[in-house]
Image 1 (cartoon, rainbow, N blue to C red):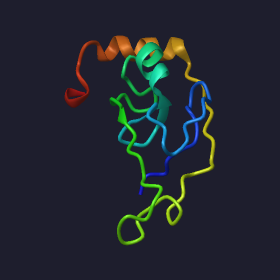
Image 2: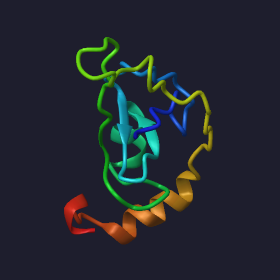
Image 3: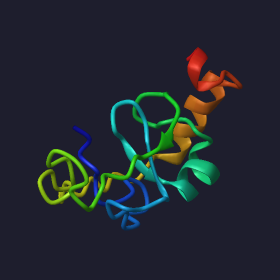
Length: 102
């Protein structure tokens, strides 16, 4: 089950469970859309993978108890600002490879 982490790992922007701005990689590293688009270039600084919009967990119990109240979002903040110089080297190494080819 996705943790739905509460903030961007880089800038610490709040990303509540219903945020349309949250982006995750396959390891659930969580960043805001602005950081992914303008600083990270769609390259996760932790694994080198790409990002996708984080799904929204339903707030209402529409079916079988699968909803936010029963499975709440994480409250654990992982504020680990990206070393932009190191990330620039990673971006250079990856070049123009799309996420599905990394």
